[in-house]
Every structure is written in C-alpha cells, then in structure tokens.
Length: 416
Image (cartoon, rainbow, N blue to C red; front, top):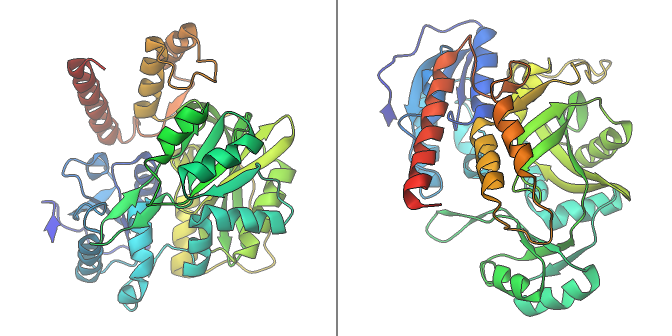
C-alpha cells in the first residue's frame, strides 16, 4: 500500500472518512466540507499529485492502483487502508470505484461503512434501458428510444427517430475479462454514415440505446435519500456543457426546485428504495421535461450545491455514520438561488474549442466566438465562483491551475 508522507492526525469525535478520486472538484468539496465539520479526512487517489492531497483539510493521503486497469487491486488497497487507518466511512466518487466497491462490499463488513446504494438499486440506475423502463412505468416522460446491438439495427431504428440521433451505451462502464473496466461515452450522429461509424465502437461490446435528440435546457435534481425517502434536495441548470450537445457542465447555476422535476425524481428513486446521493437529469424543451438519466454516483457539480448552502457531504456522512432523521422530518429544500460555479478545466476547454470554431456537430449551431471571449473575461469576475479555487484553501486550486496549464501546453505542442 502506497501512502503519502503525512501521518494520520489523532482521531476526532466526528469520525474518519476516506474520500476517493481526490483530484476531482466534487471530491475536494467533500474533503473541505467534512474537514470543516471536524471529520478526520483521508484523501485517496491513483495520481501522485492529486490536487486534493494539498487541501488544508486533508490529514492523510493514500495512493491506490488505477481502478480503470486494476480495480481489484484498488479495492484491496482501500480495504487495507480502511483497516489500518481505522476509517469509519469510504466515499467513492467515480464509477471506476463505485462499481468494484459495490461488488466487494461484503469484504468491508466489520471494517467500515461504504457510501453506496443497495446493489439492486445501483444496477438498475447503471442500466440505462432499465432506467427508461422504470420511468415509463412511473409516468416520467422520456425521449423516443430503440435498443440496437448492430449497425444494421441502429440504421433501421434511426429511420423512425429522425436525425440527429443520440447513441447512449446501455452501461457507461462494463467489467471485461481480466478485471479491467471498459468505459463508453455518449455519441451523436447526424446521418446514416455517421451512425454506422459511431456503432463501430459499440458493436460486439455493448448494446446501445438509440434516442431522438431532444434539445432543451439541462437541469439536474440532486437528492439525498434513505430507502427512497428524500432527506434533502437541490436543483441546478447548466449554462455551458462539454460537449455542446449535452455533457458535463463547465458552468452552472442554482435554481429554485421545480415541483414537477422534483416529483419525477422522487418517484423514480423511491421505486428503487435508494439510499445515498443521486442526481436525476432532465432536458426541458418544447414538449416539456424529459428524463435523460439517473446518475447514481456523486455528480461533478456537487461544489455548486455546497456553495449554495446545501451541504450534501456532511449530510451524507451523518446518514451513514449516525443514521437517518426521524420519519416526521420532511426533505430540506432550503438553499440560495442564483449561485454560480465553474469547472475550470472544462470551462477552458469550452472557451478554446469555441474560439477554434471546430464543427464537431454540424447539425448544431456552434457557440459564437464573442461568447467565448466573454466567458474568458468572466474567469476574472469575483461574482462567479469556481469548483476548486478558494482563498481559504488555496493549494488544491493552484494544483488544478498547474494541471490545466500543462494540458494547454501539450495541446499547443501537438497542434490541436
């Protein structure tokens, strides 16, 4: 087991929590939140210079093998660390660790708690076809969809869906023989030739949900639940996404909780008897809102919720270490509306790609260059926040800036 040079601090009364994927903004937000509330936080990552290692709230560091290629070894390292460091709770942040930890959860019995939903609930959320079937059975609107395993099936289905079409892998992460994890991304096609080309990466490996492309504003409803009962809820809208067709948000804003979207989200997660954190994603378009997916892991825009006053990390730790509140308490939906936060890495990528005017998706109008220039200038605005940059805990942000600068230098050197 590889550890950093810092030794664990003495046990605090709140407990010791290990947070994985410590270089991500969501993980750093968790580290800060728990550290501020008296938890002893172990920051864990497979990268040696993970920004979360430098947080003032990190009391110990742990390196584990890359879970993408060695998930069982990563899990074994986490189990050994949990026992040796007397960890009370492990909070996995990405699917690369959520899935193998879920499979190995019995190995952690008697050692520590895992911030994971029940296996059946997690499996149904990870299976996008099962999610759609669940939504249809609960009256939640979804895009028109067809299942395809081959290019021929996809081409036949596309004729009824119209162009462009969205290609969603039935599962974004799949365990393959040998233990490594295959990762699949959402694709888009504007014509038959593009669809056949996109299907090459899926055929024989993963079934694909072929969907109509439904334009609209992307919203995420985030919840903490206990056995399907909502304990806290928050909502945001995406102001910019990478890619522009719909993806991770580079810039987003807290908005008032929409009763219809909240009702859809609660009905879905109640049917799964979900425990823990989840985000339900929707597109709000001309035909009303439609479900995009259930994100069963900790979402990337978590720092926005915390900055808006909805401290999901502290509530999550309390749920797993102290138990749920009494049934008489309703869900907490109080937070500040109009708060903004950006993912610096993705925002720089959005600005650079817009300035280059590369038409990756010819069926969509690209953002204007003047919008990219305005976004670049807003990087200096004190009114818009960042996921990681913080005056009170500056070192993770400085490490993030160094990483972004290094990435930009490589792109310039490669001529991209």
